[in-house]
Image (cartoon, rainbow, N blue to C red; front, side, top):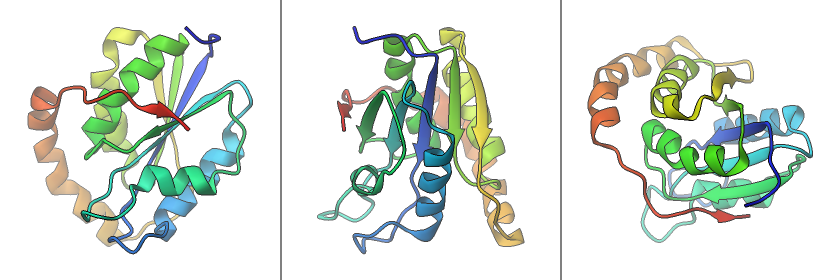
Amino acid sequence: MTDRHSRVIVVLGYSDGGRGVLHPICAERLAHAAKISTEHDVVVLSGWARVPGTRPEAELMAEAWAGRSGELVVDPDARSTVGNATNAIDDVWRSGADEVVVVTSRWHAPRAAAAFRWRLRSTGATVVTAAPAGGCVGDWLRELPRWLMLPLQLATDRPGPARRPG
């Protein structure tokens, strides 16, 4: 077991469409996480490769990471917000975190918070969100049908393989 941390910061990826670069939305999330992170935090960079043969968002974020952390974890396996939350369970238990900060976009934050709170309820950790400014009406509208899928995703998503430290 590693040193105990009080906080896990989970940075949610955003697809670059297979171009191999950080999407501007993902880069904003990463920069916001770097502003709020400390040398005591476990920082989890989470995002998969939506296009076969391309690099996962988590790896692209790890290369661009400019923040502080006690530990940097790369999670290239999560394919959804619920998957991000499911994979974070191990990091929360292992680090003894009492708080999880989910870094995402403002329009995504309410659904992400709901998913993380439900999935991490057994850990006792408090879940909060942090988001850079931005987003348009279209982003908020795109979230509406995804709320309908959330209960099914929470019921069916199971932990994947262990993530590796960055």
